[in-house]
Length: 305
Image 1 (spheres, rainbow, N blue to C red):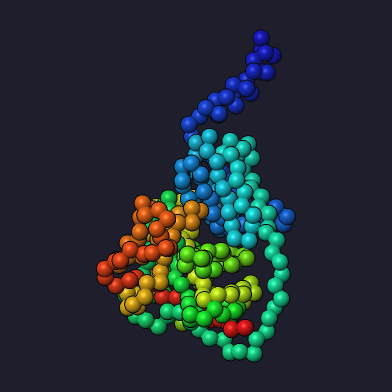
Image 2: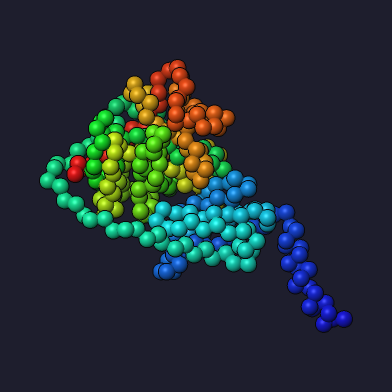
């Protein structure tokens, strides 16, 4: 009888886990080839629509229904999607680095120039949103009506009281056909650091990524990193000090509340944005709005090729 129980017991144990409503998942994300931890990996629980990040040591901790699935994503790596039930057995996540075609390093005899919005008066500064939204705000950097080919050397954000204890992630996007942010052009994630604070503004050097843009401009963005292991407070985050202004007549800034769903909304006055109920109308023709637009104070140093 004891031998029979020993055989059946593991089956009963697995069955109890399978039908359990929620399970706690704890683990670490690493580079599969090098074995090094990957910090600040974006994590999405699919059915529950929860969004957060691993911490600076690649660790994560969350609760989920056993029937759900999760996506791990990081700039420079291939996404991986796994059933939650698989993470009960193994919680070491190995991401594979993306293979990028090496671009020729192009040397231009033209002088670098700074374009964008950086010198206007700052009227407010933005904070992160709630814990379930991986909040991001971007602004369009335009050349002119004439398409250009350029390299991006640096990105600048006006700021007052940037706190590196509340990490932020840089994004740079091509402009898609509908005018909204499109393909990410960074090949490795860039986390804003204390050293990026130069003379009262954030200055991020991306020269080593050899970014070449062709078109009428690009988008630069800042994304909140919401840790799943409780290092940050829940709810509204403290003020980052990244400057916004309503002094510009053109509406340039966009907001994406849920990073993985790629839903972008044009900003209203007072920081409001178009709700998802507008479906595919966004990016085709923005409805008329009243009041001054809100724009993030951002710029970039480029070299025309």
